Structures are given as C-alpha cells and as structure tokens.
Image 1 (cartoon, helix red, strand yellow):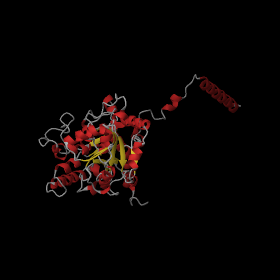
Image 2 (cartoon, helix red, strand yellow):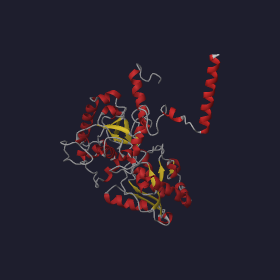
Image 3 (cartoon, rainbow, N blue to C red):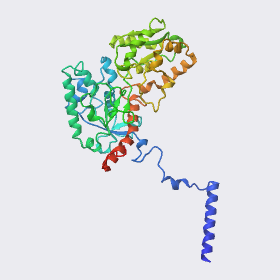
Image 4 (cartoon, rainbow, N blue to C red):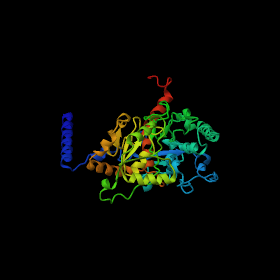
Length: 434
C-alpha cells in the first residue's frame, strides 16, 4: 500500500514539474549550466577561448636589436619603451623583418590577458615559463644573414655561424627546450638563407617561413610550420577610396618591376620579359631594390589594374604583398607557392592564378586580362581593400594585423605539438606506426 502511495506522489510531482516548465514558470537551465563551459572561457585542454601565452627568452641583444643599433646595451631589460624602431632606411632588409615585429608585439603592453588592450591581442607575454603555451626565440636570423657578410662565402659570415652555435647551446641547456625537444618553440626564419648553418637542429620547432622553397620536408612543412607574409616595402595605399572610377584611373594593364635574373622557378621572369615585350599596356622593367626604385614601384603599382607576381629564387616574393597594399590585383604565377593565413583568407577572391605552363603560352595571360570584366575587377578590388590590413606589420600592433594573424596561426599548431610531446613521453618506440 505504501509503495502505491509513493508512486502516486512521484507521478504528481513529475506532472506538476512538467507543467511548470511548459508554462515557463520554472527554468531548468540554471541547474545544468554549471555542467557546460561558459562562453569565452576554455578549459586548459582547449585553450581556444583565450590568447596564446608566450614566454620569450631574454637573449643578449647581440642576437637581435644590437644588429640594428650597435650601441644597444644589455644593462637594462629590453621593453616596449626602449625598443629601437625599425630603421626607415633599411630598404630590402625590411621584407625579412618579421622576427622584429613578432618580438615587438610581445614587448608591447602588459603581460596579462584581462585588460581591454590585451583582449585585442592574439598572444601575450608571460614571464613564468611554466604558464607558457609556446616559447619565442628572439634571434634575428634573417637580419644576421643580411648583416654579417655580403654573400655566402664572405668571411664575415663566421659571425652569423657563431651566433647560431651560441644560441643552440643556450637552448639545449634550457629545460623547456629539453622537455619538448623544441617542438613548442617558435623560430622565425624568413630569409631563405637564414639559420643556414644549424637548421637541422631546429627542425622540430614551429618555424615562421615565407615559403618552403629552400627547406627539406623533414625540416619544414605546412602541418608543423607557419607561412608568413613578407613585410611589404612599398607604402600602403590609403587614399584610393574616393576615386570615382578606379578601374579607368589605373591606366596600366599589367605591371612588373624587379630583378629578372633569378634561380629555380624564378627563371620564368626572363621568359616572361620576352613574351610581354612590345605591349603598350604592359610595364615590365628590370630593376633592383633601392630607396628610389621602391618609390617608383609604389607609383607604378597604384597606377595599374594588375600586378604580376612570378616566382623568385623561391616560390614567393615580397612583390605579392606590395601589390596587396597597393590595391593592385595580383597575378600569381607559381606552381609551388604557399600563402599565409589561407585557412582564413580565400585568395581567389582578390587574386588571379596562372600555372607556369599557361603563363608561357604566347598571348594567354594578356588575352585573359584584356577580356577581364570591369564589374568583376571592381569586386576583386573591393575585396583586396578589405583584406589588406591583414598584411600590415606595425608597432604598436593592431587587431587582425599581420602579427596578430601570425600568432593565431601559431596557436592553431599548439594542439598537435602537445599531442607529439605527450606521446613522446610514454612511447618506447617513437612513431612505431610509421
């Protein structure tokens, strides 16, 4: 009898609760919300809801800013306030200065992620390595190559080699390098000859590269590393928004100005010079990068509908990003190019692509460009203006600029890094499944 009474009571309680929820007088969600993740917050195993926490090694300045300012002293810590500005007269060296802008971004602002300014950043610096998701190595490897010796056989390159030796000794004595085998360390190597003496010793790290043209697959690959833009050397075009008819105002159909003697895939430049010669709507000129020539190229790109981007010594070159910030539709000719931020940016919305084979077919490129619809060009031009801010390197950094985009790319690599580190700790036969 008691059992029957209890069943009746339970039934009526259930009936009343169901009716209350249906009528809206009881909201069951608060009772379950504690079991769910709160918006904007992430668990330690899923750090996507917060900025990347980066520990930056405090290297002596000879590894970085002393190459820009020989009088720079190690007496006081390097901060955002005493950081030397990137020299305006650096010319072509600027295109490989990604290493500087990444370091500058970590020196800027505070070391936490709670302030409004910090919320705009994809990464912030931590001073406790135990809290770090990644470790930044502020060695200016590209500037070191460009500074110490004028060519590969110059005796002064011994300075560059010695810096690499000292750096690796420093890192290999770090328990954090030892702990991960360097996998969670971020090392920028954007010049194709940067870090050339000891590259194999950093092949497990997250490398910041502009392409994979000079690296073996066991050292650098898309799944492990981050593709960066070159730092553009022409000035950004910010005054073309008020032009009544940008299509008609750009009187040159196709523009190229640069070195025509290149290696590897870049040999196509000489062949294109011959193919495109004699066309009044094409500007194709051999040139070297000087301060004055960069100014001439700036004016030429701004006056052109399309800017030609053939491969250089490696599959990419700075010219692509000069075209983007000049709002000149890039015409990309490279079968092996990799592009930055391609998981977030669709380059086909503002660029044209031709295979090397098609580009060398007489008349093919020019016929395609001359028949290109004005309406479609206008849409691509608008798209180009909308994405150009993603390719700006600046200090202080700004939301969604190139530095923040790069740190977000690094952040995407961290889960696979953690997987590799954790597996390596318990496997007796590493990668047995291969």
